[in-house]
Amino acid sequence: MHTAAEVIARTHLAKAEEYWLHDLLGKAHAAMALALNAGVHPSDVFDRQRTIDAELAARTHGELVRLDEHLMAEVPQDCEPKRRDTVLSVCWGAWAEVGQLWNVHWGKPVLITIFGSRDAALFMHSRYGYYAERREVHKVCLPPDVAQSRGLLEIAALHEIAHAAVHDVAGDAISRWLDEGIAVWTEGGSSPVESRRLRLAALQDRVPSIERIEAAFGNYAVDLDSGQAAIAYAVAGSFVGHLVETSGLLAMRHLLREIRQHGDTPRTFRRALGFDQRRAEREWRSRLASR
Image (tube, rainbow, N blue to C red; front, side, top):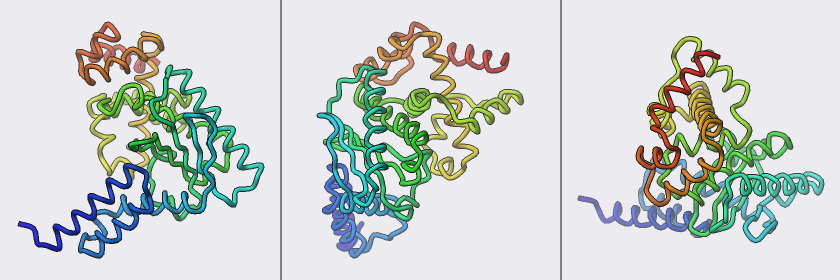
């Protein structure tokens, strides 16, 4: 049985989450403060608190630019004009490329937020930034270091906007390995470090199964371990690349639409692509070994 203080704290915490999902960051920040004051232990909500704080800082000290009916960007107000133009150009180009690649008819706009300070982004352990679906927008948040390099920004934007495309087309029921694999393939494939880890794992017959990769993506410890994360992304991206190569992009688009209609199940996979996922994984592993 919960005490009155615990009930009040949980209520404020639920409101903070609700406001965050609606991208009402000021209200989310205030509700989180009330939850902490009412007795929620900071360690229990640390990541969400830091996320809200970082996004609110970007909103407060940023400039909102509408690039298209379905694309907006938040850039730091102190960003120099030339850098600002580059960031906006890269974001628009990545958004257009992803939309065409996956034939997306956006149900809601994409909002790309560039954090203004390194300190605000210290809580992130992700590959580039992160994608988070909100009620009114698909939100992509990127740390400032990514925005300093045009090449890295292009890769990161393609990767994270691909998540937005996948969720817009397939919904939220999609498997994490397929979601991440599509994002890695869309960005152009694994990084050199990730590819090297995959080659070494293949040589030693230590490539984890797709089932293990699915579990790994949901494990916070993997996010903190660059080695485990690298192999997880490499496996997902490589397998999706194999599926695109053997079935074609049209079939993969069809798979995403089928997942929205019927869920992400082995039957959906077989109906959309014409073969069993386990068989596809065996063929992919055979190719890895032969290479």
